[in-house]
Length: 260
Image 1 (cartoon, rainbow, N blue to C red):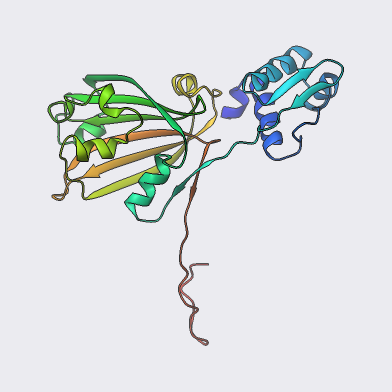
Image 2 (image 1 turned 60 degrees about the vertical axis):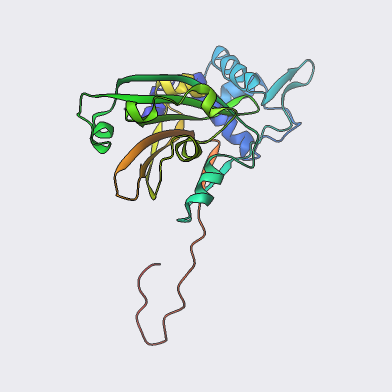
């Protein structure tokens, strides 16, 4: 089954209207098509349209005005946080941590409990061994942008508390400054996914909404993995960007290298 087809119709309508607003098809300060027109455009009932508009109104994107209709509100187009893919860890950390943005961070919980087997293996722990786990939610202007899940060996991270992370410290900063861990490298994997019910609830987005899942493995100078972080980034709030220098043009008469 197509994941989009599994979404309730009102969610599909809301997602489509949201995208059209972002793309400028429905401009700020201007009314959306009337409810009757939206019913015709999407071939759905009036109840479905009202539910969809309710979602957008709750997000502050639209507002009903008597005698005028449903207006697109100023500021509905959102800035995305650009994460630099440069090979430079400091640049990545500064952009991913949103250091140029008013980030609000909440530690949801810290626990020692069984975790993913592949992460236990990466940390050189028995597969059934409990892992130290910290879950955090990061927001801008009160709206969730990312959910972070950090894993490590319990003995090594026991002293980390919610207060340690205040007000919006990065996990890397805490590992270095508070725990004295020397980090030599970060291995990263990025995967596209959609929000299931738990992540949709945490990130306050729709079921099936696009996300980036970023796995960071932090290694010490000996090459041992000391911690793993899973970041779930809202696809509507982040982009990955990179600047890649091009090689000089191949001499005439010689074949290029096929990088296209």
